[in-house]
Image 1 (cartoon, rainbow, N blue to C red):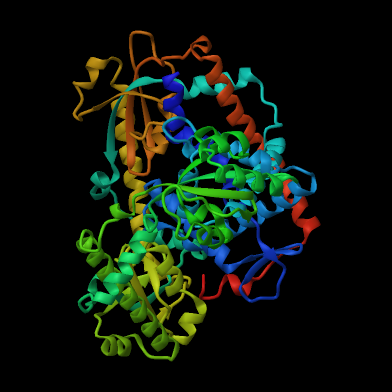
Image 2: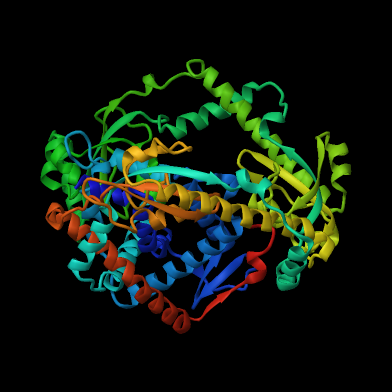
Length: 624
């Protein structure tokens, strides 16, 4: 049902999904880690296996990209929390993979091959498995066939074990229906908000009230930690580079052909022979070819590859398909013209015989055809290299104890300062969590050091905090303006609530709203998750019944002051309106949510039995 789908896309629905899926996020990070090691680049060990700083950094990057893809503001991402979450997910993933393998949950190479051949992404327009599409996938991922098989094997085992734990919880379908019906309830709402600032001039705060509040809350009244922050910033666009040389153009051209896999445009077919008699069969095939037999016919008769149905056609030669054996195959194909047949080649697939069916190398674009694009690529590459060198140089100066002003003078970059840079409620240009974390790092503050480069969105920063003012209890004099502002808001909000209550009592019908001194906004039909309401307004919006043909008015104290909500009857959703599919899908979500506690208990057990050790020094080093 569309309403249920809308609910699952709503804030409450997404929260429910998040509660179910966040603990399972590590399923996307499964893979094989190296053996245990005392290497300082090892951030954690799980039994005899280890997680490296590189793997953790990749996981952090994946998380960050996923958040940004969901429209998260990159500057507001808490890097410390992100790092901790990524590490815990990597550890959880490996614990479950190890346990799944121990329990014998896995797939054979033959089964994985069958699964991959049925994947639509690897099928051509005729629905047939395409070696070319498969090869391009491997190249895009930057992995070999064996690595993909290992990844699929681990992922399957991980999912199988996870499902056996998470999906076991029981939750009555009647309770699920009641929960859904509550979330789908709607009613029309008219709203007016009384802002507390409009009543502030009607209240006074005495010295005695301030003193009483101070003595009652003295331990809670503290200053905000501050530093004076000096910084420089740099972007690749600021770097000037020299004109592109012919040699650089040629390098870009070769890279361009490799990226598009157009360095060899020959179409090839193969005959794959497997089994103990593959050797004798290969000689038999070679002899028949010499006697004039057609390669396509022999492929259909002899080949053990799915391409046999197409006469052995596997498209253009792609090295990524053959992994470490690519050079061996490439050597066998060297010099072959259309119609020529290679010698038998022994690979991990079996024994393969190839023929060239067409040659389109004359269609490869010349360097002049793509010169504008190559020039842009070359300039971008040179600028990125120069930018990287600049970053390294500045980092070296920082390590050698140069002040940020000295660095700015030497490297000819702009030097800026922010006075009273706050640790909390920071609204400055540099108010991003990762910069705040570095600015108030104990070691950096103590040494008054310049940090290594900090990347935020498209900019790179270096900062130097000085004149640190730690959190401290406020004196009575320092706390006075803070307390006065707080008490003023409290008193003004009470006046706003009184006005809201008076207004609410005067409204019995819709027509009464037009007789009030204030104007009401018609919000239309809303549900319990409506983003048009404040949290305090949501709490009361469905708290009272209204007559079928009338309205009721409700007042509420809010963070902004007070509100009056005029609401009509609640529109209920009958259980019969929910399809069986919708009920089952939501039941699964709720049951998985309940099953998370079982999963966390199981992971805690695995942590104890496998001996998880975390290298805090490596985690908090400057490499992460």
